[in-house]
Length: 182
Image 1 (spheres, rainbow, N blue to C red):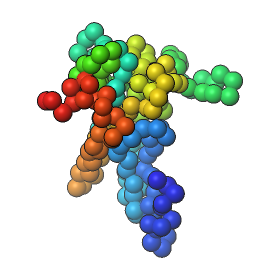
Image 2 (image 1 turned 135 degrees about the vertical axis):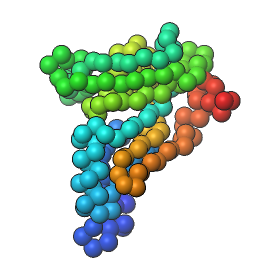
Image 3 (image 1 turned 120 degrees about the horizontal axis):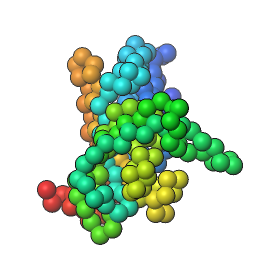
Image 4 (image 1 turned 45 degrees about the horizontal axis):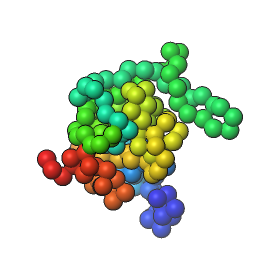
C-alpha cells in the first residue's frame, strides 16, 4: 500500500500510516492525509482508545463461547526469526474473544484487543490453544493467514469508523464456519 503513497501526495502533506498491520493481515488500516490528523490518530492508538475488531479462522474450536486472554507479551528471537511470547516482565496484553461460528476442525473467532502489542491477536490465539489458520509462526496450519482487521473505530470528532469486507481468500473457510448464514 505504501508504494502508492507518492502518487497520492499533494505538496508536503501525507498520506502517512497512523498504525501498522502485520504484512499478511487483511482489512482496515488508518491513513492520514494531514500531519495534524496523523499526530491525533497516533495519540488515540498510543493511549489504547481505538476500538479494534479482528476476525480469524482458527485451528480447532475453543470449548467456551467467549473469554479473555490476559498474558503479557515480549519479543523473543530464536536464530534469525522472532515472535512474541509470554513474559511476566513485559507490558500487559489483553484480548477479548468470542466464537462466532464453528466448522469441521476450525472456528470463526472475533478478537477484540484491548491493548496494542505486536502480534497480540496471533500470539493470544496460539496461547488460547487455537492458532490462526495459516499462521506458521504461531503454530497454525500452512497456508495464507486467515486474519482480518474487520473494524476500527477512532474517537475523533467526527468519529472515524471503518469496516472491511471478508476477503476472497478467507471466504470459503468463513462460510464453512457459518458466515453468511446468520
